[in-house]
Structure formats: structure tokens, C-alpha cells
Length: 437
Image (cartoon, rainbow, N blue to C red; front, side):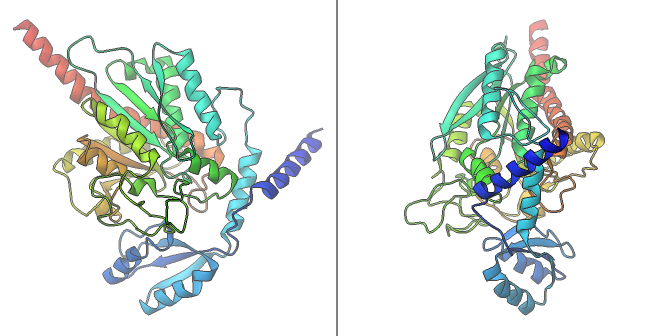
């Protein structure tokens, strides 16, 4: 019987591949390129818009891993040679990596009841949102669900607001806003958001985390792209709109936000991975985040957006290599979260906390910059999650979902502790002193 089940699973797997293997990365190659001079490093950065960088070199001596299509490989090698850059091809055929992950994904798929959640396999978007709705239905005293917008293809984008109730004083409770899944191929991000929901709402031992701080969590804000990665193209990054006059589908939602849009590190060519769209906030997905945050911005004290990969906690500015006025606070609070994650990690996560553009490269139109520049939220971070022991990026194995979400929640608790002490406990003490006087 066991052998029969295994055979059936294999047959299902191959049948599924025939259906969903619409986009092939056959003979796409991964190049490892190591800059040895400042000029070489700057040259590599200039290629970000044209090629798909899976790992970006942040300083001299550190490698970049770049995926290059078969028809572009000769041109890419010629450019590297002209700039005296040393390189090697570390993967000859990206498709083999994708097929390997498909096998593991299918073999780890859980049979979920309606509204259930799992952190042992990757869920479909419909399953994720069924869980969000079920939490709101089962815990109406703590959670309420809102449709904050619709994707280009008309899919509801849901947000769960979590609270122990309204403030009993004239001072509103501080709020933490979280989103995930802006870049849809980064599959590990939505499970992190879902795990935070589970721990805040369903785990009664965490009741103190919602007592004085409200939460707003949008677990997957690019539903069209996410579904597309599961059915058609595993490495799709953008949304799924074909703007009028564009040659290619998709806008990079994390270049579409309105603060310093198109200043640097974004493309105006629709076929590029970092295409910023025809205008700022041209996309319904980025507008959904904007239109919920702006009316609530006075209460939101922390903005977190979850991405992967790289084990980094990055803060603005991203549009240019300059610091915000409160950069010292951003660094210090980010380090508190990083230390909490690392101390609990079972997969040896090692986070870097840094200014986004200085440590990486400019990327204008990102949501974390907008949260500071337009919504005036002082604390704003992009959390680049671990990739586990996957051989290459975005392919974290399902067996490592649980350790990633668990350790990340420790970091989220560290963020919460700071927000509560800074924006609630201090205010409460001040109110008490006025009452006594």
C-alpha cells in the first residue's frame, strides 16, 4: 500500500508538471561574478535593471549571482570581459532547480481543511485568505478582516486588524502595520505574516502583545503574481498587468510607490524586473496599501514589509545613499530585532541591519521609503528573510518554513516591545503623573 501511494504521488507530480510547466528556464544560467575594484562594482550595479540578480554584490570581493537567458549569455560574458570581471557559471540550467523544488513542494503538500493553516508546506492564495477569514470569524473580539482593494485581475486583497479593543483613554493605541508578498516569487514572506497572525490571535500566551498595541497585517498583497508563480512561472516577481503600450506584462510593485518614484534604481522599460510602471501608484495593489495606511498613519508607529532573501533588516532611504534624520534610532531598533532572531535561530540566521541604498543599491519607489516620506511613519523596515539551505535563492525548502517563521516572530516581538515602551508605556506614565498632580 505504501509503495502504491508513493507511485501515485509521483504520477500526480509528473501530470502536474505537464500542466503547469508553461514557462521554462531551460538553459538559463547562473553566473557568479566577483568585483575586484570600485569601478567593477559600479558596473555590476548598472546591470541590475537588465538582468535578474539573485544575489547582489554589496562590496568589493563579494559575489553577485546573476541569472541570464540563453540568448543573452554571450553578450553578458562580453560585457564582463570588457570590464575585466572574473566570473564562473555555477548553474548551467536553472530549470533543474525549479523542477527539484516542484517535486518537494508537491510531496510536502498538506491536505488542509477550509480555514486551516500550515507551516510545513506552501499554501495557495485561496487557502491563505480562507485562514484569514476564519480567524476573523472565530475570534471577533480580537480580529476583523477588511478588503483593502483588489488586484489587477480582481482578486480581493485582505487585511486583518488585531486588537484587544479600543483605547480606554484619549490616546489611541500605537499600531504596527505589516505586509508581505509584494515580490511574489519570495514564497517565504506570506507564511511569516500568517504565523504572526496565528501567534497574536490563536496563541493565548501572547495576549500581552495585543493589549496595548494594535496590529494591521496584509499577508499577501500580490495575489495575481503569487498564483502565477505556482501555476506558470516560478520566478515571476511583478504583478500581472499589461499597461497600455507596454511590451511586457508586470510592474514591480516595490518600485511603484510614490515617494521619489523613478529617482534611481528603477526602470521605465516594461520587460525589466524593476519596471516602475507608467506612473507612481499606477497599480491597484500599491494603491491598496497606500489607501489603508494614509487614514491610519497617525497611529501607525512601525511599518514592516517582508521580503526574501538575504537575512537583512533594511531601512530608508532606499532611493539614494543617504540617511534619514532618525537613522540612529532605525539602526538601534533594527539591531534589537536582529539579536532576537539570531538568538533563537535553529538555522544559523545572521542578520545585517543597515541603510538600504548604502548597503545594497538605490531602489526608488519602494514601500518602506514611502512609509517614511509620505505617510510620515518614523520606523520603517524591509525585512529580507533567510533562504535556509536552499542551493539558490527564492527556493527555500518547505521543511524550513517553520524555523523561519518561528525565529522571525521573535524579532517581531522585539519590535513590539520597543513600540509599546516608546509609544504606550511612556504615554501611560505621563498621563498618570498628570492625574496625580
